[in-house]
Length: 312
Image (cartoon, rainbow, N blue to C red; front, side, top):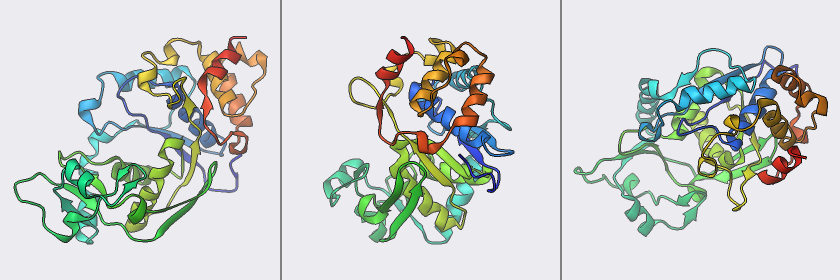
C-alpha cells in the first residue's frame, strides 16, 4: 500500500487516442487509479497523448473518457490534451538548447542504420554524426539531446532496480522530429512535472523509456517521480495486447463489473464473488482498500487465462 505519511499521491493515466481502450490500457488505468486513491487526498489525472495528430482517431478521446466513467474511474481536474501544449514544449526545448544540451540532426533513418555502432534498447544507436558536424542546410532537421556516458539508476516499485547507460544503450535521442512533432519523452516529462505527478504507473513496455525521462528531469532540475511498471497482458501470438488484437474495446463487450473483476485478478487481487454483481463503485472501493504493488506478479501474463477463469 501507499505510505500515508508521504505527500498526497498524484497519479495519472495517459492513453493515446488512436483507437478504443484495449485490455492492457485498462489494466494501467485501474492500477494507476487504485494506487493514487489509496493516499489521503490522492488525485488521479487523465491526459490524452495526442501529439501525433495524423494517428489520432476522431472521437477516440471522448470514447475513452466514457469508458473510464463506466468503469468507475473518475478523474480529478480537467483532461489535458498534449496537442494544446505545443508552446510549453517549445519553451522547454528552447531552454535546453540555450544550455547547450541539444543539437540539430539531419540524418535519415537509412543513414543511421548504416553508421550505427550497434543495436540499442529500441533500435540502432545514433552515432552522433551531427553532433560533430553541421547537417546539410537543404534537409529538414530533428532536434536531439546530447547524452552522457553515465548510469541512470532508479528503483521501480514492481520491477526493482533498473540501470541504463544512455550513451551506450540508447544514444542521443530525439526531442522533436523533423516534421515538427514533439517527441513522447519530452512531452511526458513536461506534462508530468507541470501536473505535479509524483507516481507514474504504466505498462512494463515503457520501463526502458524511463531513464531517458529521468535524464531530462535531471537536466531540468525537476523532481523525479516514483515509477511502477505493470506486467503486460499477452495475446495468444505471444505479443503484448494492443489495439490490433482488439477491434472493439472490452468496455463495449463485457459488463463493467466483470471487466473490473478480471483486471483486479490480473493485478493479484481476488474480489469476493458477491462483488461481481454489486455496483461498480463498490468494486472499485474494494480495490482501493486491497490494492498493493507487492501482490502484482512481476512477469507478463497471458490474457486468455483470466477470461477463461471469469467465464467459469
